[in-house]
Length: 217
Image 1 (cartoon, rainbow, N blue to C red):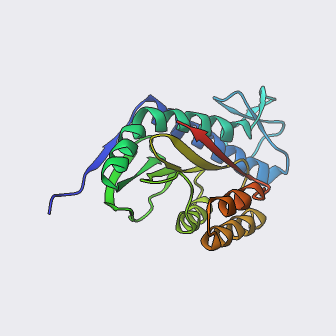
Image 2 (tube, rainbow, N blue to C red; image 1 turned 60 degrees about the horizontal axis):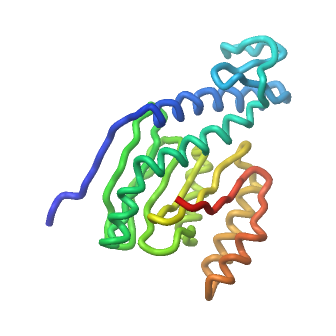
């Protein structure tokens, strides 16, 4: 049996995503400590008051810090199209899935799985995607994995084929309400009998701090 393909590398997109994640973690901590949402210029975090143990800038940035979530997601969509699209094509041809992570140190990792599945221990990271040979919709098992990743601090989780991709990303701290809604979607997906059932489940998926989008590649 041939060895499974593995790749660890970094590029400007993965490094920028990791840098933004560092900003985001600081901003989330400050929001929790002070009760006031900090701001950012996308390079620094600003607070109206000093926060012990954190190197923050006193003042106000141009953006609410929650824009960092959006920026991470936008950059990750670029990463998927530039780096993962070729793996998605290979999955469509062979049925063998791939999984990829953006790690917190700025590296990205890609691992080859099996036909119609890919399972590995989930490292600490920022974003995750795996390729699908069929429709680019999260399965109930994928949503279960997404729940565990959001608990661990991931921002973006995606599934992808050569024609489209589906993304769920955080736009705030992952709350029990978000988890409850995700589990409802998981249950509805597992019971779905056709594509219309899946569309109905996603149309009613409106958690407080999670954003779902289905996009063309």
